[in-house]
Image (tube, rainbow, N blue to C red; front, side, top):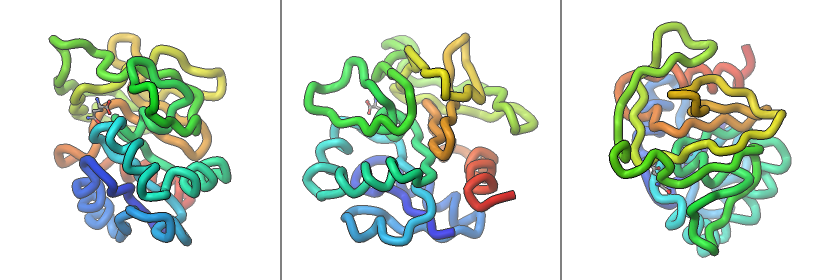
Length: 191
Ligand code: GLN
């Protein structure tokens, strides 16, 4: 499989390091031609408003949107989750989202006190709990009937999947646990 990691802004380096560790070299996606021949994509955490702007100026937004509509497998984490959702609450008016997964998310939805925290999360299809780092994370406020919830924290969905689109509101690339990437990889690359 040929993997790409969206690299216009944010925490793309850690995702690339994990994929390399798992034996999957990944290309940095910065311009439209970087999407050519990709079998799967990671959209990292960072700042979704900045990423949205850079996706437009780089010319990536349209071709990426087309690849997503055509079923490109994608793992979106934190800001990546925001960009993949159907609706963004508390976003900037001109912020783009791709509607690749049927979620409405609220940016920075955990509030000031809980802006950043770490907690162990039980994820379906993984064994032991996953140490999850949340940084100004989005909260899932609505989810459509086609969305599977793989993990929740305090009744809020934090890992969701709809077909080839996987999202986490936390940062699975921070820390030494690579099981979420492995799980995504095993589904994308086949059993
Ligand atoms: N709050 C950020 C946003 O709105 C997301 C934070 C993150 O990716 N760690 O894009």
